[in-house]
Length: 86
Image (tube, rainbow, N blue to C red; front, side, top):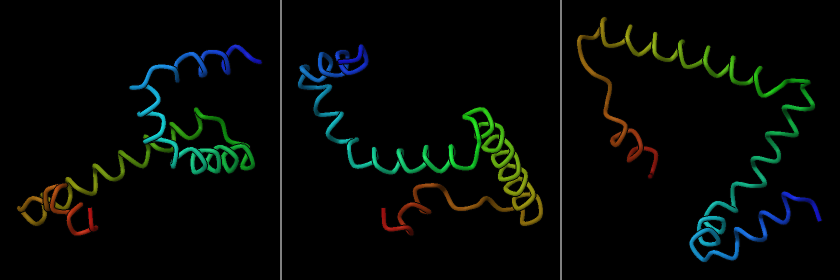
């Protein structure tokens, strides 16, 4: 057994850690698919981070432009999430 597997087993003996792990477990296959896709594309985690930072800058710039032109604020995140059924 690897050190990581031993650590995981030891941590999961704590009921709070086990509960948190159980709550997050549905996302694990998605994360695995994302990692596989990143590797298949030949990208590193650093490549993804740079790309995400660029996307965030573009989004922020777009939002600022929207607010400047419209002189109004976009809807608050809670309203957007309610509209998305959350």
